Amino acid sequence: MKRQGVTAVIYLALVFLSGALVGGFGHRLYTQGTVSAGSKSGRSTDEYRKRYIGEMRSRLKLDEAQVAKLTEVLDSTRLQYKKFNEAHKAELGGIQNDQVAKVNALLSDSQRLEYEKMRAEREKNRK
Image (cartoon, rainbow, N blue to C red; front, side):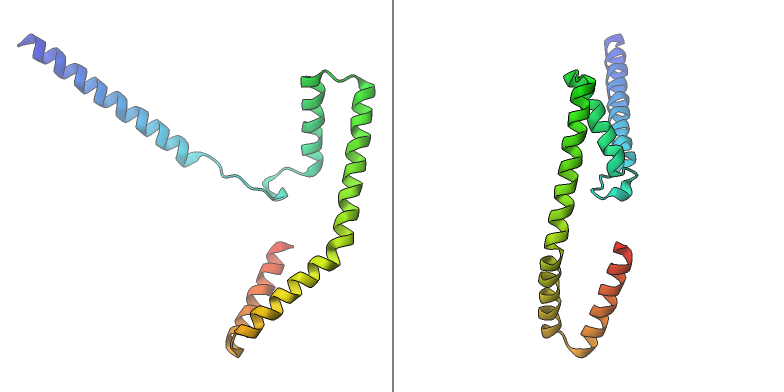
């Protein structure tokens, strides 16, 4: 009789512990933040750059001369990206305009009006 009582207590404790474990895991999933690729997540490119240089400095044990050269490399790369984006901005705009024209061609007049509203809202949100 006593053995059954001990077994029941053990099972009760296991059920309680498994519930606590599942509840803790569920709470962690519920409260975990989402990932955002945009810079609106609170991190600017300058903050990312500082963290990157800091990690390179600490993990690779860079000296000051290497950090200065790394900064030059990052500046050069940033300039190259900027030039590339500016050079291809017109081309990307043309592709976008082509898409808009094709979508407009398949819509009715009332749908076109709503589509223009949608595009205006998206443009406003993007800025």
